Image (tube, rainbow, N blue to C red; front, side, top):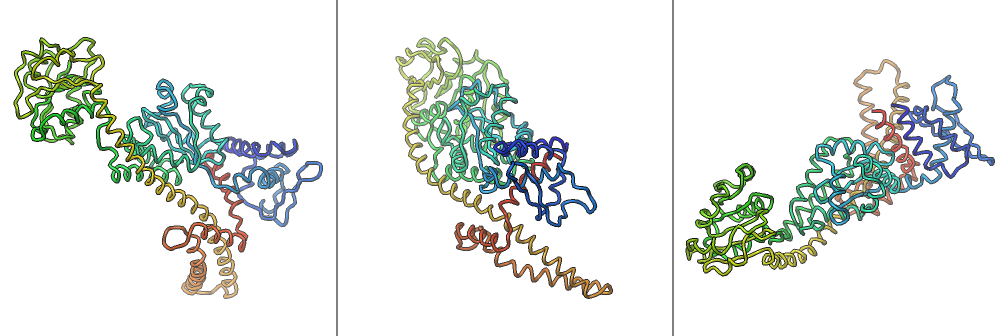
Length: 552
């Protein structure tokens, strides 16, 4: 396992050493077998590049190696390589925080055939996160895979290399060639990536504007990521904030109100045509229990209908719908009838919804003219609402007295009107997204102070421990344990009191009126005053984390 970890670090080093001399490239390679060099950092070690391009190592008194240990030249070369790396193109690591990147394909950019191949079942999300985080330039990852989109969110050490690695991984797991993925994918970085996820969660990127299912799917990403190594702090907070955005948008703008799908529009139109007093008592008949029929039943239940008769070829689908709606449809009767009872059930219905795949009409003039009239309490008209293509209700039925037919084209008017209303509400949602986006970006920026907080605490602890040890040596060996503890507590108390002010001025948690710029200015000042070098140590920390992940 150490070899694979070393190979990963070698890749990181070699990627940034390619512009240097051949001798420098060779110096990087021995690091593969010398990972332990990093376990004992040596502040006295200096990498020096000579005029002829060779790298030599100058070391002050060093504790990088155990006393009496012979220094392997390859270790020296590896350390020199790191020193050179710090001052070369690796500045993009040390001077910038990690990037949030989304590599995605959606219903807007890719055909369903490709999305099907790239889709990752929810049960496989933890495995996918683990594989993604094993890539050289990926720190954290999450997968959002639905019928309309396949999006991978990562926290990346390098944007360009992360995109390349993730795309190749997608190709390997799906069998779709890289050029095909590149043709249909979209790429977004940092603030744009965050804003995209917030819009997705709010339903602003859905085919049906404001639909609610996507919010549940975003929340499921959070649930599936719990306890998964690689679903880290940044990604967790990203999806948590996205969930908040989705909830706020739906609550504060009511964007989900009004039918914008054919099935919901069919129910809404029926209730518009019926007297309000009959909404819960009107006799509803649904012919067909497929996808559209199921949605009609769901919408009827949500509107308060208490009795629905469903005609279908088999009872299994109707029983499944009844079971699914059992909790939310208490007191609602969903009654199954076979296809042979269609005309008899139509005679007892006030509203008939048709949604079958039949290529010939189920209702013609001769079928409807002999049906008994409906009560004046429901308007005196039997409504046929046909959402099938081809149509299940012949146009000739409109000639029958006491019958009214509506088809898909009639429903489009309802959908169009509601879509306009949702577009207005989507504009309102943008301000919520912008507000939450600023909050998230401020939170990410505040993370820059975390390494400085840790370094400052460690720096103070080293001094405290050294002075405490010196004090004990002066007090002799027979000092009582109680006195020893009192001195140690005193030293810790002094350090904590001294650190309280600097630590407070490095936190950005809305507990005071300091701006983020002020906090970052304080951080840079402390770095200079105490030579904390948080940038370089952060880079080394990331490299070590990648090594440790590979060793586990």
